[in-house]
Image (cartoon, helix red, strand yellow):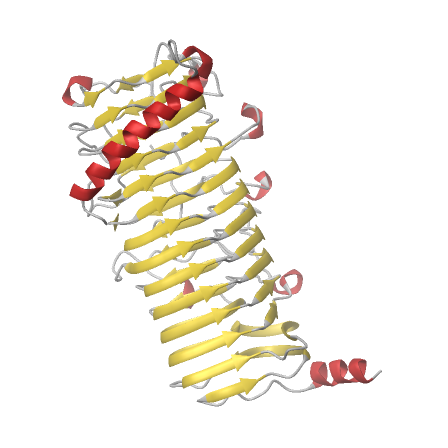
Length: 481
């Protein structure tokens, strides 16, 4: 009875005042909020901590505010040990994307945690659920650490009933020196973890996204947008692009996505299963590396209505050229179309296993397989060297070797080029190509052959990495604005 009485009292109590500095321990129980709980502007050296027995910040049915918890123009703030419940069923309203000159922090309400112009933010051990907007939104901030968050059942839809990118963790408008680590995101309608900036804003930079897990997202698991010097590594996920009813046809789901002008970044050792879209999209990615990633689809073509290429280059941003990318030791197992769509120059494509490609069974000249009628082999080749994506591109001086490529038609159309692109202008081969892996290996088994190719490619990739900078999207994502 005492515990129940304390919980009821906390629920009825007005929201606590947050001081400008020091440690504030919120009371145990549920604190229902009709308006946002905000730290004072200019707060510094502040810690907001939940009670050991558990503290829940819950949005009331009539809640009005940018977020349940707002921190702005502050320095060295920690938020730890809380649960935030957004009451999505009562607060979500159909909403599309903001105009191209408006950041999300000025457009999307009903977020979980909102941080603007904060230097030194730590958010750890938080549970966020039923958030109508973004679970966490940080804008124009630096030294941001986000660790061990659990985010479930969040995000809202547009007027057509499709996701509007919300629900996950968004870093926008030039966030610098950030880490998002060891978070778990399940049943998020929009992107899981992503960086984004307006075309006219500073790029996000110097970040790490590592060790996170994603399950059942209707858009991207991770998107690196308009960024430099960001590492994405050792993340895992499954069922990306589900439920299909919430997928935006103009925002093809991707396990590892890219947007804007993104350079000197690395996507390494990430593993995803059941991706209803693309494994890796490199729209705007240049002078970086894509190494040791795995995407595996076990189903048939009809399981993936938004299925695509495994890895796709694009050049939507006018300030970049697709060049200088290392693609080494990745495995694509089950792609609706090809394994790699490549444009640009100076890339190294080595030691990749591109298996069970062309689940759609495309053949040149089949009407359903002619995205560009003048390029009939586009959707049926294992690796396709293109002449354009969003913009024309010069595709030459690329190295494509030691790759294992299997799937329907791969013995006939393993590596192909668009009209006007010369395979002879690139260094192609040796590669192994076959309908099935067991047909690819001569005297060696397919497994043995792949191990040899991977070992050779790893050695070459290490040599290339020492000398390299460290640093056809048929439906482009709407967030690359």
